[in-house]
Amino acid sequence: MDWFKYLIIPIIACSWVGVFLYKKYAIYIGIIALQNHRTLHDSPIPRGGGIVFSILFILFLLLIWPYLELSNNLFLILGVGGGLASLFGFIDDILNIKARIKLIIQLLLSGLVVYWLYLDSLFVGNWVPIYVIIIACLFFMVWMMNAYNFMDGVDGMASSEAIFSSLTLALILFFTNSSVELAPIFILIAATVSGFIIFNWPPATIFMGDAGSVFLGYIFGSLLIFTTFSGTLSVWNWLIVFGCFFADTTVTQIVRVIFIKKWYLAHQSHAYQNFARITGSHLKATRTVTLYNIIWILPIAIWSALQPEMEIIAAILVITPALIVAYKYGPLLSSS
Image (cartoon, rainbow, N blue to C red; front, side, top):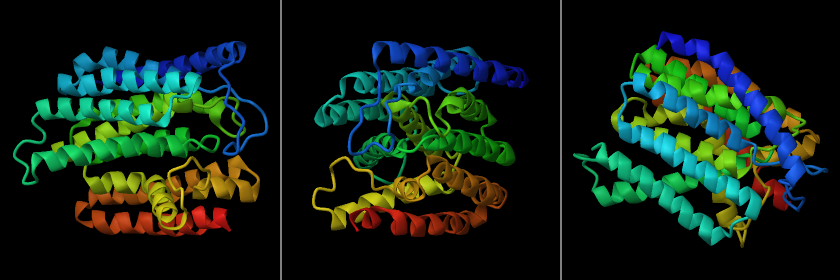
């Protein structure tokens, strides 16, 4: 797979051109983000741009898959399932699908992941009853798709997190020398999103929409389950890399359930959203999280990969500051 490195720049270029063309088309036919109480922008912006990098991911995955020593069921999960997730998200960007229908479709997508992983025998022989594993995986996949969707509320936040997380996980695979065949998949995610972030970085001129956020949530959720059960990566690796993301989403939901009567309604009370409003800048919010990822999370992630016996301590070091910030700037600040 040494030749794969020569594809990275062409992939980024294809992503840039694709997003550039899609943006013009979306404006022409009116695929525009609606202005409402949850919007942090003052002017309409085209959405659904995630369809570009999701399609590119699937196309290049088809190209490199024959050279990867991975199961065909994993390809079905990432290629077919990922395509369906992005298509569903794109339709939602255009038609605004009702919440109940969204949940049903998300459960069906999650069911495909569980079914194909079950065929790979990843769940066989585990001491936990199979029905418990299936329910937990279904719940996690739905949570992951919605959580990543919630994260796409500030310019560049979701796309920069996807790039950082993918590249960091690829680095961990290289440092641990475990299933390096998976590394190109993570690099492919980062490369396809890199062309998009040029337009999505604050001030954004396009949003990824559900076509991108549901796709990324689905892909990362599927890879987390696969790598955890196969022993390629540990749960701690994922908790460390997605430290900010998991902390903000988890704290926000818990606090809303406890203190907010209608906690299940759409909102904009995530810590990063409140921080963007307080500072009056999407750029400051996204740049702060990006710097935290690079300066704090990245070295700790590499350290934990080289010293796996320290993974739990590393996860605590990463998540604790993020939990404090999420609690301080989260729903309680919004309600006050």
